[in-house]
Length: 330
Image (cartoon, rainbow, N blue to C red; front, side):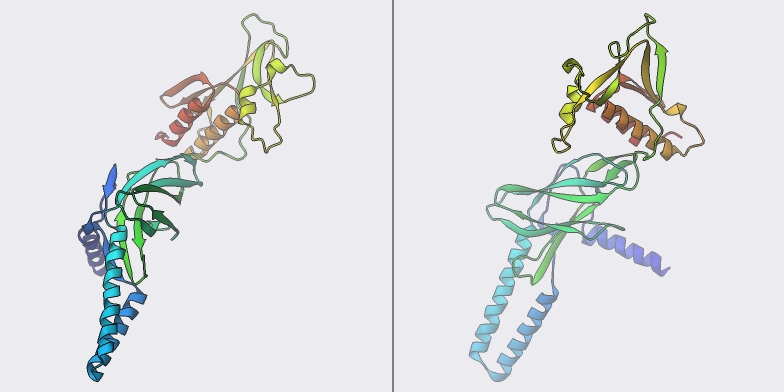
């Protein structure tokens, strides 16, 4: 009974007092009612010191004591105004989130937009939620400028990963008060299945070529391999070479051909053993897609009702991985 009442009170507090909302698309404006401010521990100590100074000035009729007390109090009031102004009237917008594989950190891009003539300083942003690390990033936003902040969340399973709720807070300039606000950006990152580490070789299907004959090394493209002395310059795999990082010794690769038989690569989800777990089958398909792209082998892809013709390249890879990430079958 007590826990139910506690949850009800917390829900009412979050919805009415702290203005917690569902995901907000587009640009969000932090109006005054969405910004809250309370004293910090230093602020409470500051207030207690003011009370002591005021009581001492009254008891001993100290004119300079009154001057000092009200001077310090006015500094606190100005700090309250500056702290609240540092966060209020900001514009917020969610940016792009790149796809990741399960287990990796998804990075969400958040934009802070300041359309006023004064700068905003020491604004701390962090995600809120259960099992989320309490890691925050500071941001300074100059006058009439935009600042991008990247916050990370570890993905645990494939599919869409929605951005958690964001808390923005600041103690600028004196640290006597803390102003904060909440924002739930309308941003999602696509999480691909994790590639199987020890996957079997690619499922190549051999069939005879139409004319029944061929010569090894000249007729049918079979993939790429490291460059060997004497290989023709015409057979260099320039697309794969362009992807090689210059720091990886700049290894050259050449196209490999086979004659007499023609190999086809078909990644068919239905051909996998049904005794395997669903996520394990998707993980194996993910690994095969990545290996086919790495070896430069054109491949067809079949997953449920989705059937992609043989192709190769970033667009084909993205379409296949997206299908695996969002697959809802059994």
